[in-house]
Image (cartoon, rainbow, N blue to C red; front, side):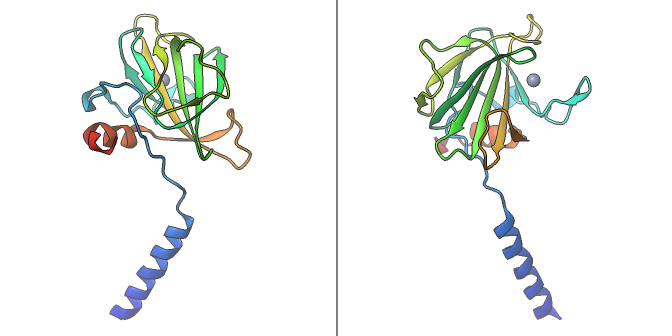
Length: 172
Ligand SMILES: [Zn+2]
């Protein structure tokens, strides 16, 4: 009986391992001085009729935001709700890191530009539909599909990854 159970567990683990999607690895925090107390898990909150699917990090206007991975600026997009946004792809094109409500972009930032983890790519603001009195970074990780479109991905809750990053800064 025990052996059967063990075999079952082993087969479950191998199925799980084979089907496990890749996990995003943040290499630098989006806000350099980010602390655990700055993080709230609002991923599943409703905003109007849609799920928020992002983490809001409240910061003073103009606070630099950083590339969280080595990658490429896939898209700079002015969206009505998101304002000034950045879509940063990792080098493998597996994940997209989305920054919204920016006050502006880093000087000379351009689509197709390669960036390194920690590079300043923009500044916290309240562009789009954010409250002008509550500037913040709206941050989401998307798992890109095989077609790797910047506008189409599956949102992943960044909260545990951000928390892990600020709690173990050694990983940088
Ligand atoms: Zn938000």
